Image 1: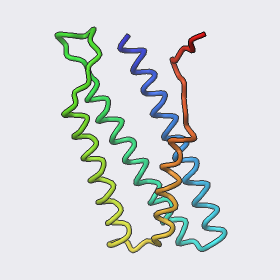
Image 2 (image 1 turned 90 degrees about the horizontal axis):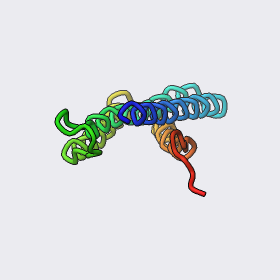
Image 3 (image 1 turned 45 degrees about the horizontal axis):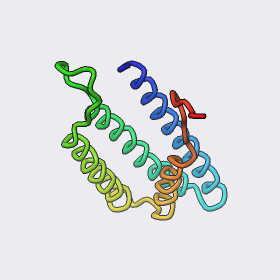
Amino acid sequence: MQSLSNSAFDHTLRKILLVQLGLVILTAVILSLVKSHSYFWATLYGGAIIIASTSFFGWRLRIATQTDLNRPAENTVNSVELFKGIFLRFVLVIVLLALGLGWLKLTPAGVLSGFVVAQLAFWFSRTSYGVTRRK
């Protein structure tokens, strides 16, 4: 059962990351053509923030849902690890946004465009891997 849930988790995470990457690259190219070349890098950076955040939280979620060796049949969630992952993801996003907008001085509209488009990818990447429908 563990391998089936891991494969479903891996499939879902991979699909979300690929949709995020595709939407961010498409948006970066469009903004580069419509606005300027500086929007290209800013949009890629904004999208990379969310892609890094998604990858990081996927890793932390895997840690939070690992079962104990003593009780492998139980489906438990380590809520401390889950909340730690949520908090660290929030901190990661804030630090990377501050780095891009403050120190790197990227175009704010481009960074936020990539950021928002990558977040929208969660909506576009709905998956039903391993889910059976009831009749």
